[in-house]
Length: 202
Image (cartoon, rainbow, N blue to C red; front, side, top):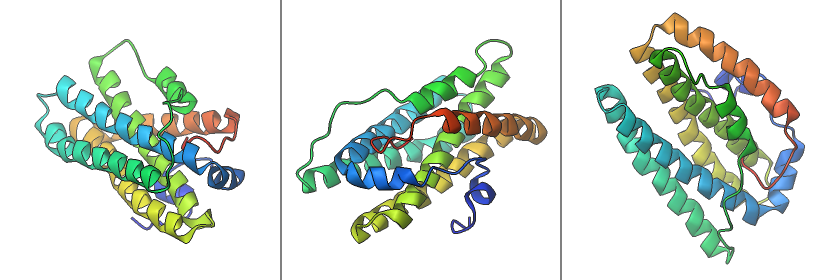
């Protein structure tokens, strides 16, 4: 995946992050690292939940098992960075972005549709995280932190494609792509209406 291309081309995201976000994040380094740590923790927990719920899907179990380890490793890396800088892991904050995505998930109807939305929600979170980490890797004043976030950006890009691939493994590709377009349009509206805050990854 060519991560230097335009965000819309690489990830399908319809709306780029407001440029002001990087400047605010650079000012609120303790807050952004804290929120980042919890994002990694929640990603690991969600993968565990998917494995538990869909243990009959061998490909999903095999593909997500190492992601659990990787995401938890990311949590430890971010925590180590906080400690190194004598910063505190603050309290977990409400994630308005993710909560808005959860509202779009299909709650009733066919189990297949709910399964698809779970995978596409994760794909979208990973895609937006990748885009945000790309912004940090290019826009932060601190060269060390730019490199720090470039590594996370590359990892999240791989995770994004994995969730899309898993969806297409178990469901018709046309169905996946049609629903993905709906998710992308919805997510753009979510981003447009969220307050620009430097203490949040999303």
